[in-house]
Length: 217
Image 1 (cartoon, rainbow, N blue to C red):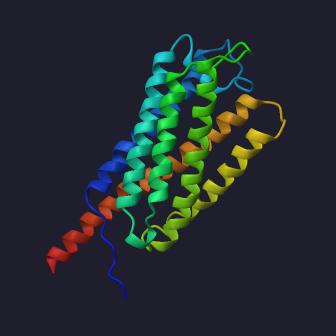
Image 2: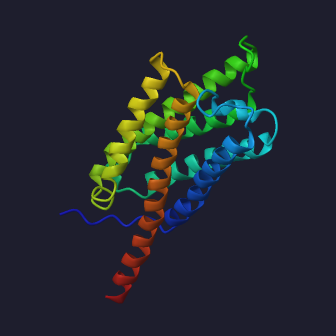
């Protein structure tokens, strides 16, 4: 029988640092829905809020989210048993985080005609959504190879699949309320990131308890 994998202690801190970034992004994004009544919640994409009043807060939230994704990617890799690891999720999460940063840095086109910055923004946003969503799917699937993750994160697997479906409905289906669909997709991603961040900090805690038990023997 294979020995139970004990993750490094720093995994707990990666979870503790990534969770505030996710929560900060959610809080700022939600607050702007009330602070910017000039925009329609149902029809306006979140990227429009990167321009105009309070945009500095949202820029900071985008960067915090990118950092949280990278920290979570490293934590999931290091905090999983070797059989449950794959470099693909690490690379995809980092690409997704890079897409989040470039999305914030390149202004979106709000008046219907494409500019160079607008094209970069669209491509970066697509990278952020697709890379992060695929990484979530793969990571959720790989959790099944680690007994410590498997029973506790079944919800993460279901959430990743649901988010992936919603993403492609938003991207491909000619449905109204485009702003709402984009925000729903983002919300599902945040839920997955928050859930896994929370479990990651507990996973690091498992390492400490395991280490103390071993020393006690």
